[in-house]
Amino acid sequence: MHPALLGIFTIAIGVGGCVTYYFSSNWILDNLLYPAKGPNAGRNINRANMIRPWLFLFPALVALGLYLAYPVFETLRLSLTDRDQDGAFVGLANYKQMFSEPKFWEAMRNNMLWLIVVPAMSTMFGLLVAQLTDRIKWGNLAKSLIFMPMAISFVGAAVIWKLVYDARPEGTEQIGVLNAIYVWFSGGAPQQWLTLPIWNNFFLMVVLIWIQTGFAMVILSAALRGIPEETIEAAIVDGANPIQIFFKIKVPQIKATIMVVWTTITLVVLKVFDIVFAMTNGQWETQVLANYMYDKLFRSFDWGVGSASAMIIMLLVTPILVWNVHNARKEMR
Image (cartoon, rainbow, N blue to C red; front, side, top):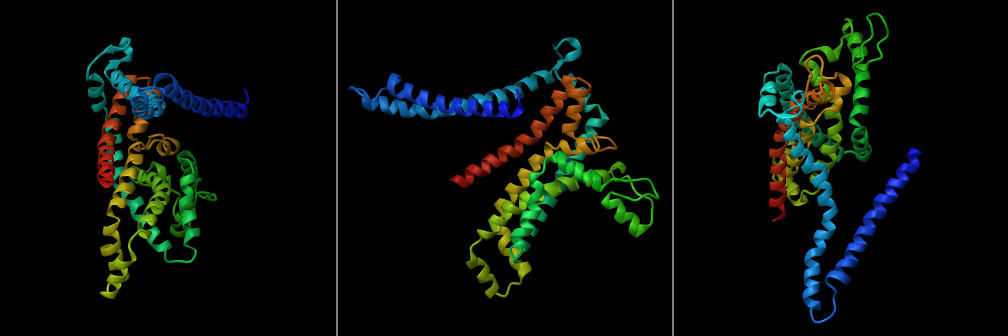
């Protein structure tokens, strides 16, 4: 089938199926199971109203169970088995093997480095841009340009920045922006930036910071605009300068929003894969956990160690998710 027709067919079936389900389940509930007539009409209405939310939630619960809960438990099961032994239960042997591999610890070290640098820099730049663009006439245009990388896929961004870091042989024209600038000013030989240990991790981080700064800017800009003008005016009357107003008046009032942005970007960092895969494929000491998991699952076909690394990623993500949910519930009270 033609891809366009397949897309239309899928949308029609999906939307049509949802509409049919909601109308038919509602009709069965109100007309067959608990009709609103007869001597028990009041009780039937109450029962129908108690069941109706669960009917509407049922498709979402099924989808969550099928695509979230089941994969988690299946991954846990696979992490305790060995493919070479026909799926035999081996306990924590896969975890022991994973912890003994230098590549795993390299991935852990790099992920921790990403966690320290990317959320901090993205949030800082986003906050800085949000503050500065509100003070200029063409601020909305500037925000649009800075937010634009958010519309690019991680792989697309990786390809763009791989060209920025590109190196041609010495003596030839450099098409990579970074090498063109470096050779122009230093007169030295072009550098293979993505092969320089430790530094290449920072070059990869720049890509994610470039993307996430736009996200941080949008959220923090909205938070800054929500600050009561009275507090700023009072600070001005008291003789506070712009820097004092920003750090002592504005930042404390949007602290909760800053933490939300920080944790959201942290979740993205823990799952980072596309950028590393497209730019270095984990070579030259740039391995991260998601790329390590991919190598084990789809290159080594070792589902045990691959699933074990997936469980490690989930364990690292879970506390942040719990913290976010806790804060969201606290703000709703």
